[in-house]
Image (cartoon, rainbow, N blue to C red; front, side):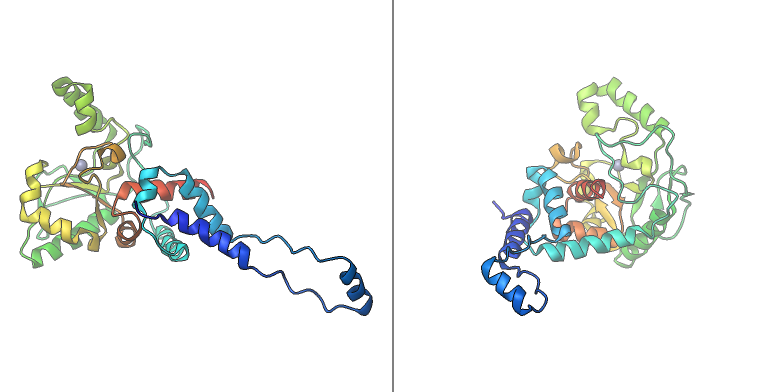
Length: 285
Ligand SMILES: [Zn+2]
């Protein structure tokens, strides 16, 4: 089993405690020197770096599976990378939910929520739209255009099949799948209204929305390059118990380039682990 950052962080805290020197005291007068000879100075208690303490607390609250996914490393490097990701978040539109918003089967948005700045996708030279009813948050729409242009340079044309879904659309879709497959199967394949990344307006389903998409050049290109443009695969293979969804090779969420790097470097490239961590970190602020 991999040694986790958590263990390293605890180790560093105890190392600090052992090595820290008490603060230098004021120059002693002859009388106080005599006094200190009689009364041994009790070393001041060492206060560990509060950020490391917080890191330990947050990591302790995470699942074992998440802790195991975090590679061995320097906690200060981790904190510096986290800080970068959180600084970038400050530049996101303040009148909408963060691109890092944790949404899953346990963390939802209301029936009323819809992104503040939605842009309708229209036919363009960067990628194909498979419907005329598609829309994304503006930042995600811009990033999709950029990714589409980069793919085209490599001879790949991405095709976009599904984007923003309102609460009502999710409700209709979910009820349809329940009627076809029953509740249990519908839960794996579809999302209960208010729990879908698509309601945030920053997720895209590419291609035919089917496992066979994994065999296409488009999907292969996305797997190799999407992170360079800030797009992260949300539901990877083998993590159904973590994400709540079976593998969806076609579903990508726009989270920004820095968050993609952070996810890859510290969370075994699992978006869900990173957002659970960020959510827990913020809830302790
Ligand atoms: Zn999707």
